[in-house]
Length: 198
Image 1: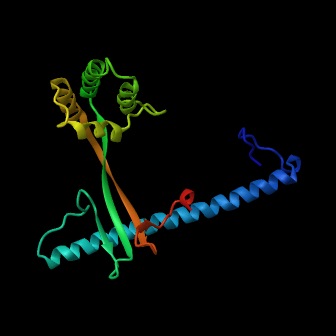
Image 2: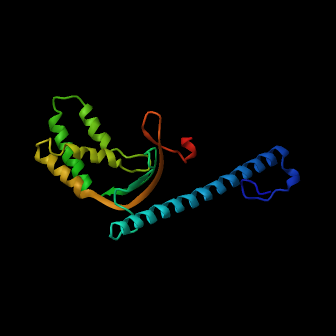
Image 3: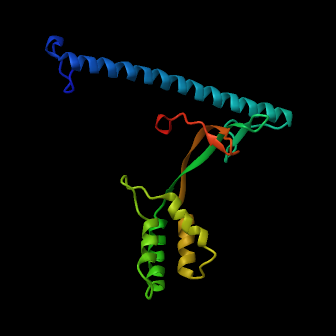
């Protein structure tokens, strides 16, 4: 048998317990791979069916439907509205060097505005520009600063908001497929196909 250091070891020297665990792990990993393949096939078929349905709708309304769907996605619902297949398209966003300028401008604003205030304001701003373990910025936090772009009349702040807008670079998009069902409370919730969510 191959051991963890990739050496071949005679089976006669391997403990029965280790052989049993090995067989147990291999069996369930094999089942997991089969289920993964079934899910991949299912996902591909659902996408194909959804886009085929869109093409039928395009024919009905005498227009041409491009493969790939709308930018924001779309959904199909059962007649009673209790079941839904939803496709969403999300852009992947990164930031260019303008973001560094925006951070410096915002820091200047915070320094001036918080001279008589406590440090909580600084913490909120710094939190928006904090990176995760992989060194990535939280896009949502940074973009949330722009919600206040028209509420703060300070030229530095307005310039910072413009720099953030200029820094945004769409590097691609990802399409998500969700299956949803209505609960007894009337709320549509996802049918989880992720083991961690079960």
